[in-house]
Image 1 (spheres, rainbow, N blue to C red):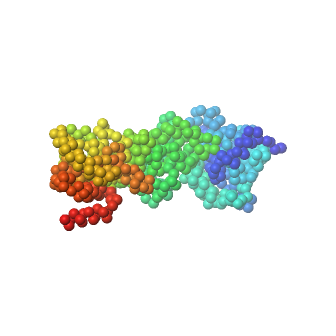
Image 2: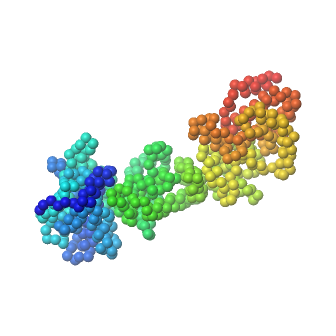
Image 3: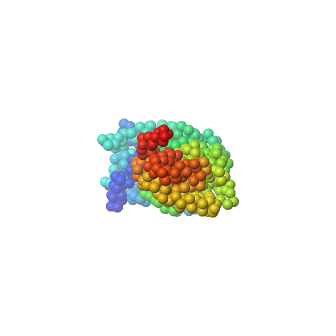
Length: 609
């Protein structure tokens, strides 16, 4: 029989596929095994509806043989096979899917999960072979047929001898080149590795040299009652190359418009490359047990990017290479469900196992905070109840709801203070004054904390307020009037002191909020001192952004009478006192002093007078 030509469009598609659509040559084996599995599915279904067939499940298998001497890789199945005309139609016209046609013709075949939705997967064989031979026999035809092709040149179909129904595909593997070592596909260990990677959960045994290479039943499709905790742990550690057990396992099966199984793991530690550009988020994506993508980033949001795991669905719309997904509502629906599931499981952990949640948060809490902060706080409402901060009164981490539930009846704001460590925050003058009034504060020690609260803005209608902000004033009306008059009466002296410091501060003023402390720095505007430190560190500059700072002096401290006396008698010495007070305030805030030698000399001079 003479050589037949592929249709012009099929020839172009074949050439395009071999050279560009498939970016990873090794997936050819996945495609051929998936087609073999489809064929066995069809034969199994046929045996259920046609009494002349008697099949045992134990008879169904996929065999792989390696003939190194002749450079042949052979894949054989005992599935439905193809007639001569089916070989013409299915393999002579690219993108005609026999599996899809079968599914359309057999609407009641609900239990038959066919992997192949497109007919192009077979042609991936030409990426690694220069000749493909297909021997196939169908129960609908007395004789077997052989389809042979060397690629775009065309193909032949002719009768052949074959024992038993099914299909035998022989790939003549290409010779090695400088860029590609095709001979690796003639090695047992390579074939074993590829079957394990891509086809481990094909439901029929895949055998090489009488050895079964695949596990067949995926753990995520087993009944949960059959799976022990150690089974999950071992699967996770083996599948995701971790040396520690996961801190949380989430196993769910979802039925509906789009059905899928999900097996998710929260690691017990950060991946070593988590905060590098090399880290790739994403879940493994399977279609009926066949790996489609090793890391599908669209299945999980950035703020849960630390979650490992997989999703297996039979309802996905795949594109022609089966390497990528069409970005449609199916994928979005799965991502939404998975996100809600992870969130609800974390909420359960927070409520029922606080110690475990604290452990989780110590590892991944920063990522949740970034999630609440990023994209202008778009996801803040989803994450706010998962955040915990250190409480000044409880001396432990608390949720925003726990703080809210303990608020005083007349308290209209949620108070917080920022600093490098809990001890440093505890010693801030402003913190002392809030403590004296009996209010709880959140102590923020992570760089991102204050940014998060500013994006949240409020919780249950209660605004977040920095205790070091000048806008905070818990004084009585009488106290406010008294301090206002004090500042007005001493305006000229305070302006003089401001000029002595220079442009680093907005103003100098008296305050009644410091208790026993002499001075502090407060801020006006959106940026606090701690936020400015963080931003400048990120930009690599200590003198980039500046907070609008105010030097506040305790009007009931003995230092005030000294300052007033110096303003009347020795303004030069008042300048020295002002510089020292400003330096003290900066040190209290954990800020550096621009002129330490000058300040040291000023202190020593004053000590010797």
